[in-house]
Image 1 (cartoon, rainbow, N blue to C red):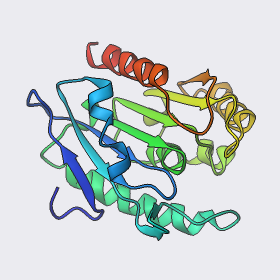
Image 2: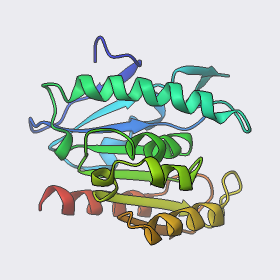
Image 3: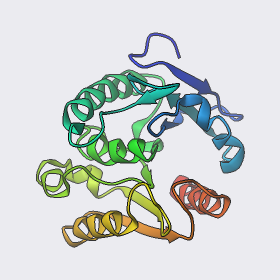
Length: 209
Protein backbone atom coordinates (compact mmCIF):
# COMPACT_ATOMS: atom_id res chain seq x y z
CA UNK A 1 0.00 0.00 0.00
CA UNK A 2 1.24 3.46 -0.87
CA UNK A 3 2.28 6.14 1.64
CA UNK A 4 2.57 3.85 4.68
CA UNK A 5 5.59 4.39 6.97
CA UNK A 6 6.83 0.82 6.33
CA UNK A 7 7.51 -0.96 3.05
CA UNK A 8 4.97 -3.68 2.48
CA UNK A 9 3.19 -6.19 0.29
CA UNK A 10 -0.60 -5.95 0.15
CA UNK A 11 -2.67 -8.98 -0.86
CA UNK A 12 -6.36 -8.10 -1.32
CA UNK A 13 -9.18 -10.32 -0.15
CA UNK A 14 -11.04 -12.48 -2.65
CA UNK A 15 -14.31 -11.17 -1.21
CA UNK A 16 -14.26 -7.39 -0.54
CA UNK A 17 -14.18 -6.54 3.16
CA UNK A 18 -12.81 -4.16 5.79
CA UNK A 19 -10.85 -6.93 7.51
CA UNK A 20 -7.06 -6.89 7.36
CA UNK A 21 -4.40 -9.17 8.81
CA UNK A 22 -1.15 -7.32 9.54
CA UNK A 23 1.85 -9.66 9.37
CA UNK A 24 5.19 -9.07 11.11
CA UNK A 25 8.11 -11.27 10.02
CA UNK A 26 11.11 -12.48 12.04
CA UNK A 27 14.74 -11.32 12.15
CA UNK A 28 16.52 -11.53 8.80
CA UNK A 29 13.30 -12.16 6.88
CA UNK A 30 10.99 -9.79 4.98
CA UNK A 31 7.40 -9.46 3.83
CA UNK A 32 8.28 -11.83 0.96
CA UNK A 33 8.70 -14.66 3.46
CA UNK A 34 4.99 -14.69 4.31
CA UNK A 35 3.33 -14.33 0.90
CA UNK A 36 2.26 -17.97 1.18
CA UNK A 37 0.19 -17.33 4.32
CA UNK A 38 -3.13 -16.36 2.65
CA UNK A 39 -3.13 -19.64 0.69
CA UNK A 40 -2.65 -21.63 3.90
CA UNK A 41 -5.29 -19.74 5.90
CA UNK A 42 -7.95 -19.74 3.15
CA UNK A 43 -10.05 -16.89 4.59
CA UNK A 44 -11.60 -15.27 1.54
CA UNK A 45 -12.81 -12.13 3.30
CA UNK A 46 -9.36 -11.28 4.71
CA UNK A 47 -7.02 -8.67 3.24
CA UNK A 48 -3.33 -9.14 4.10
CA UNK A 49 -0.70 -6.49 4.76
CA UNK A 50 2.81 -7.91 5.03
CA UNK A 51 5.19 -5.35 6.53
CA UNK A 52 8.97 -5.00 6.25
CA UNK A 53 10.75 -4.19 9.51
CA UNK A 54 12.63 -0.84 9.52
CA UNK A 55 16.21 -2.04 10.11
CA UNK A 56 18.36 -3.83 7.53
CA UNK A 57 19.74 -7.18 8.66
CA UNK A 58 21.93 -9.04 6.18
CA UNK A 59 19.62 -9.91 3.24
CA UNK A 60 16.46 -9.05 5.16
CA UNK A 61 15.25 -6.83 7.98
CA UNK A 62 14.81 -6.75 11.76
CA UNK A 63 12.45 -5.01 14.16
CA UNK A 64 15.07 -4.44 16.87
CA UNK A 65 18.69 -5.11 17.71
CA UNK A 66 20.10 -8.25 19.29
CA UNK A 67 20.15 -8.61 23.11
CA UNK A 68 20.85 -6.72 25.26
CA UNK A 69 20.04 -3.77 22.99
CA UNK A 70 16.45 -4.57 22.03
CA UNK A 71 14.58 -1.69 23.66
CA UNK A 72 15.42 1.26 21.33
CA UNK A 73 14.39 -0.76 18.28
CA UNK A 74 11.25 -2.05 19.96
CA UNK A 75 10.22 1.52 20.75
CA UNK A 76 10.98 2.80 17.24
CA UNK A 77 9.22 -0.12 15.56
CA UNK A 78 6.22 0.30 17.86
CA UNK A 79 5.96 3.96 16.88
CA UNK A 80 6.08 3.06 13.18
CA UNK A 81 3.44 0.38 13.71
CA UNK A 82 1.23 2.89 15.52
CA UNK A 83 1.48 5.29 12.57
CA UNK A 84 0.86 2.46 10.10
CA UNK A 85 -2.20 1.04 11.84
CA UNK A 86 -3.63 4.49 12.50
CA UNK A 87 -3.54 5.10 8.74
CA UNK A 88 -5.09 1.70 7.98
CA UNK A 89 -7.94 2.15 10.43
CA UNK A 90 -8.68 5.76 9.57
CA UNK A 91 -11.03 4.81 6.72
CA UNK A 92 -10.04 1.70 4.79
CA UNK A 93 -10.25 -1.08 7.40
CA UNK A 94 -12.01 -1.79 10.71
CA UNK A 95 -9.77 -2.47 13.70
CA UNK A 96 -12.41 -4.60 15.42
CA UNK A 97 -12.49 -6.99 12.44
CA UNK A 98 -8.73 -7.18 11.94
CA UNK A 99 -5.83 -9.32 13.19
CA UNK A 100 -2.18 -8.81 14.09
CA UNK A 101 0.16 -11.74 13.41
CA UNK A 102 3.85 -11.96 14.29
CA UNK A 103 6.56 -14.61 14.06
CA UNK A 104 9.71 -14.57 16.25
CA UNK A 105 10.72 -10.87 16.45
CA UNK A 106 7.29 -10.11 15.00
CA UNK A 107 5.74 -12.13 17.82
CA UNK A 108 7.47 -9.92 20.39
CA UNK A 109 6.12 -6.82 18.62
CA UNK A 110 2.65 -8.35 18.54
CA UNK A 111 2.75 -8.39 22.34
CA UNK A 112 4.81 -5.28 23.05
CA UNK A 113 3.02 -3.07 20.50
CA UNK A 114 -0.39 -4.75 20.23
CA UNK A 115 -1.05 -4.70 23.97
CA UNK A 116 -0.32 -0.97 24.21
CA UNK A 117 -1.99 0.14 20.96
CA UNK A 118 -4.99 2.41 21.56
CA UNK A 119 -7.34 0.51 19.21
CA UNK A 120 -8.57 -3.01 19.96
CA UNK A 121 -8.27 -5.63 17.23
CA UNK A 122 -10.37 -8.75 16.78
CA UNK A 123 -7.40 -11.02 17.42
CA UNK A 124 -3.65 -11.24 18.01
CA UNK A 125 -1.42 -14.19 17.05
CA UNK A 126 2.11 -14.50 18.44
CA UNK A 127 4.17 -17.40 17.04
CA UNK A 128 7.55 -18.59 18.40
CA UNK A 129 8.51 -15.43 20.24
CA UNK A 130 8.85 -13.99 23.71
CA UNK A 131 7.94 -10.84 25.65
CA UNK A 132 10.63 -8.26 26.36
CA UNK A 133 9.28 -7.36 29.81
CA UNK A 134 6.08 -9.13 30.82
CA UNK A 135 5.66 -7.29 34.13
CA UNK A 136 6.04 -3.87 32.49
CA UNK A 137 3.65 -4.91 29.74
CA UNK A 138 1.01 -5.79 32.34
CA UNK A 139 1.38 -2.38 33.99
CA UNK A 140 1.14 -0.45 30.69
CA UNK A 141 -1.33 -2.54 28.67
CA UNK A 142 -4.56 -1.36 27.13
CA UNK A 143 -6.90 -3.50 29.25
CA UNK A 144 -9.48 -3.71 26.47
CA UNK A 145 -6.82 -5.04 24.10
CA UNK A 146 -5.68 -7.59 26.69
CA UNK A 147 -9.30 -8.76 27.01
CA UNK A 148 -9.58 -9.38 23.27
CA UNK A 149 -8.60 -12.69 21.62
CA UNK A 150 -4.94 -13.74 21.89
CA UNK A 151 -3.23 -16.91 20.70
CA UNK A 152 0.43 -17.68 21.44
CA UNK A 153 2.08 -20.76 19.92
CA UNK A 154 5.58 -22.15 20.39
CA UNK A 155 7.64 -25.19 19.44
CA UNK A 156 8.83 -27.54 22.16
CA UNK A 157 12.05 -28.09 20.16
CA UNK A 158 12.79 -24.40 19.51
CA UNK A 159 16.57 -23.90 19.75
CA UNK A 160 16.43 -20.13 19.05
CA UNK A 161 13.88 -18.83 21.56
CA UNK A 162 13.28 -21.29 24.44
CA UNK A 163 9.85 -22.86 24.79
CA UNK A 164 9.81 -22.62 28.60
CA UNK A 165 10.47 -18.87 28.57
CA UNK A 166 7.47 -18.24 26.33
CA UNK A 167 5.27 -20.61 28.33
CA UNK A 168 6.18 -19.01 31.68
CA UNK A 169 5.61 -15.48 30.35
CA UNK A 170 2.18 -16.40 28.99
CA UNK A 171 1.27 -18.02 32.30
CA UNK A 172 2.15 -14.76 34.06
CA UNK A 173 -0.15 -12.87 31.67
CA UNK A 174 -2.94 -15.40 32.21
CA UNK A 175 -2.62 -15.10 35.99
CA UNK A 176 -3.13 -11.35 35.64
CA UNK A 177 -6.31 -11.44 33.58
CA UNK A 178 -4.82 -11.45 30.07
CA UNK A 179 -7.06 -13.40 27.67
CA UNK A 180 -4.34 -15.42 25.95
CA UNK A 181 -4.33 -19.08 24.96
CA UNK A 182 -1.03 -20.95 24.70
CA UNK A 183 -0.50 -23.93 22.40
CA UNK A 184 2.60 -26.09 22.05
CA UNK A 185 3.75 -27.90 18.91
CA UNK A 186 6.46 -30.50 18.31
CA UNK A 187 8.49 -28.21 16.04
CA UNK A 188 11.62 -26.09 15.97
CA UNK A 189 11.83 -22.33 15.32
CA UNK A 190 9.42 -22.46 12.40
CA UNK A 191 5.74 -22.59 11.47
CA UNK A 192 4.14 -25.90 10.54
CA UNK A 193 0.99 -26.89 8.66
CA UNK A 194 -0.91 -28.17 11.70
CA UNK A 195 -0.23 -24.89 13.46
CA UNK A 196 -1.47 -22.85 10.49
CA UNK A 197 -4.64 -24.97 10.28
CA UNK A 198 -5.28 -24.33 13.99
CA UNK A 199 -4.65 -20.59 13.55
CA UNK A 200 -7.09 -20.46 10.62
CA UNK A 201 -9.76 -22.30 12.64
CA UNK A 202 -9.21 -19.96 15.61
CA UNK A 203 -9.57 -16.91 13.35
CA UNK A 204 -12.75 -18.22 11.70
CA UNK A 205 -14.42 -18.71 15.10
CA UNK A 206 -13.75 -15.05 15.91
CA UNK A 207 -14.87 -13.82 12.48
CA UNK A 208 -18.10 -15.85 12.62
CA UNK A 209 -19.16 -14.66 16.09
